[in-house]
Image (cartoon, rainbow, N blue to C red; front, side, top):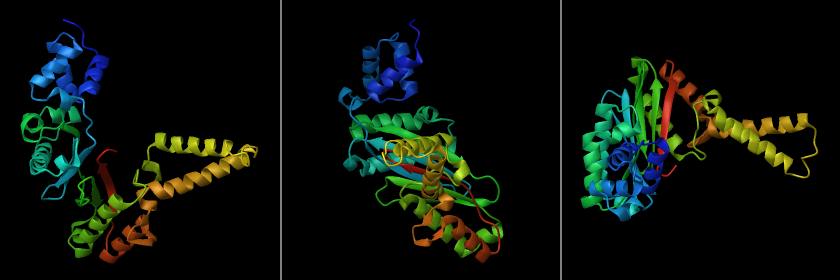
Length: 290
């Protein structure tokens, strides 16, 4: 039997759009023959024409548990906006979110192997919707400690946000707490650019270094700036990074409903009003195509 390398699996996945698990099984079955593996995948209900078409449309679903302590975050993609609004597609998305919430898969590939999800996608692709349908994201997030998770999905179904707040039961029991949770979710959905972390320290170091490199390159390519001393350039880069953090760190962002307030000040003011501490534990923002 031929050795099935990760590169071979990746090649088949890029060719077909099928899940890693399905690709590996198909390659094992065909002793590493990629074209034969495509036929194996076709035999499982996905047409060859569907396997090569781009999945650029889709929808997001966020299912928060009744106790507000966990949420399923799912992105399902398809080829056309028409299909993304199809009743069968939305029912499939709802079923997948429920299965993810119940099973708490450790990875996207694990989610794709859940029988109900695997069968549901194959049936929808081959019979009900007849488009290439791909599960792009599937995870269950939980909140530790006292608090509550809120969620919001934009009316077009393509952007969704879940925010987890830590707070005491006394604070959570007041009407203003749920309004704050809703405002934070809607803010993170609507704000451009999208938040990349709760605060400056939680933004990916790789993203920060990328911004630093871009800022420095911009200065070096400007004839008026390139000859300046390195210490001046460093101060200029630091200034650009401060603006970057103001735009991408959630707590530093200006509240979309009232730009005179930062999100940090909004949360602090609401905590004072409700008589307790409120802390953003985490947030997740999912957008189709991003």
